[in-house]
Image (tube, rainbow, N blue to C red):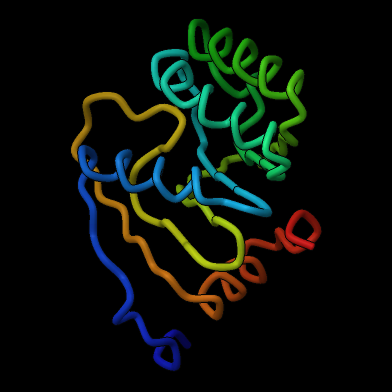
Length: 152
C-alpha cells in the first residue's frame, strides 16, 4: 500500500531534536497545522502555546485532535480541560476522538510528522518521530485519518 510513495524525503528525530524541527515547520506554516495528540499536559502546553497563538494570529488554521478530557483522571483531566479552553478561546478547533492513540502532525500540504511522541504532552520519555516532506503522503494521511473535513 505504501510502496508507491517515495520516502527518501523523510528523516527520523528523537524527542530532543523533534521540537526544534517541529517549531521551525509550524513557524513556516501558511494555511494549516493539524496535530493529533492523545494527551495534553500543562508543562508541554505552556512551551507550545506561544507558537500556536502566533500561528493563529498569522491566519493559520490550527486543528487539534485529542481524547476528550473526561476520559482522563485527576490532574490529567484538569490539565486537558484548562489547555483546551485556552486553545478554543484563541480560535483553535479542537476535535475529540475516543481511544485516540495516534501521534502525528500535518503542516500545510507539505509535511507529515508521525511516530510515538505525544506532541502536546511529551516530557521525559524516549520517543521517535519521522518527518516526511511529501504532498502525496500528507494527502494519504488525511484520507486515512478521515480528517479531510478539516483539511479543505
